Amino acid sequence: MKTSALTILACAATLSNAFTTAPCRTVSSRTAQEQCEFSTQLNMFSGGALDVEEEEDDEKRAQIEQMAKAMGMSVEEYQLGMNARLRMEDSINDLRVVGGDPAAGVSVERDGNMPPKHLVVTVTDEGKALGKDKLEKAVLDALKGASEKSKVGRDEAQKDMMKYISESMKKMGAM
Image: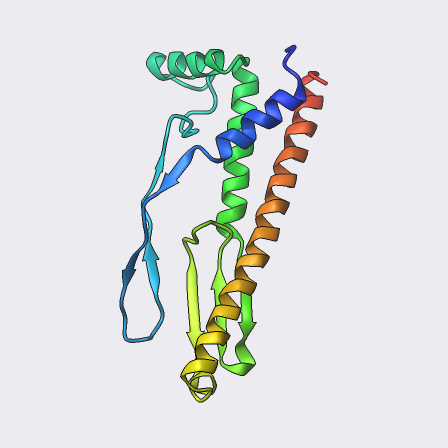
């Protein structure tokens, strides 16, 4: 367990970006809300089998050990990084922020992902009464506000992930 906490943190941060999302396909509806369908594909670091001891499939166990070795980590450190990444990903997926002003007739709700997996644009009759130009500006302002809040949420999730790794490394006796 000679790997430094900094190495674990760097690997976990790298692992947190080890997935890609397909481009958004807009699904039209009569409610004037746009929904995006995303297909998330986890790459090499899927975290599908995190506990080698509990893994019954020798092939999966060997694959986990190989990935840990390739990253210069012990299996326990690799598992810690994967667990941290999954915790951060869940935190970002569960985040909900609102931009705009619902009382003024325009609001945007989104999650912490970039691009968002959850995006709800709400325009009420008050918003429609603003007219085309003011409505466009209000929607853009709401999107910008929600985006800024989601960035803050992502940053907090990353800080929480690093704190989790640090605390776990102390428990493992690596620090």
